Image (cartoon, rainbow, N blue to C red; front, side, top):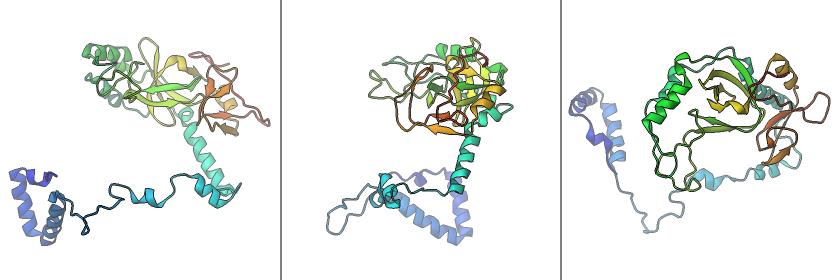
Length: 287
């Protein structure tokens, strides 16, 4: 193990030594830290047999990693929160979930969006690198000189990719002949479930991309995945009663989504047990 403290700049070392002379307690503490940092060898156990738990985390050994264990301990059909705590958490979730529809302007600074467009990096497919010309073309299409140029409200009409850059082409950190082996697309921030409220802060020059703020993050979304909503739609959508999908690939007949996945939240019709899902047409005002 290399001791990083041994590589300190000579001028900084001299100033540090003077400070240690002035503060003996600090000198003693630093001595202990140096011993810990520069001791590159592990002390073997006396019997020569390493612990079977070497390299593991104690909490993972001590606590069950299957949360159903705790539910079973509580007992079947036992509420894990009392009604007041549940109401408080429900209200908090709704504030965050519908928060984008309460915004008046974006909270994102232009420089925090521009920073990603500066220098091309990474690979697209196989061993093909992103080029600076491609990067510059994305920047030009983003039209960030006028950021933010929009202030509209929307909702995802299908499962939508939230992207770092306005492109469906991936960015890998290394040559990736098979994305199944290295599935980490660095342009992919998150996947927004159908029915996610968004605040649209910016529209690309070609109109194909929106820069949006969502309950979880901000980024670029394909404009075809977003329906523009108005106050009447928002009021009808906020029924106060919602359902959360608990598994993947659940059919949603009559919607652009086709099917929904775990984590999707949709409203219930007032005083009814059926889903109220009004799907606005992408880019169109809702009626």
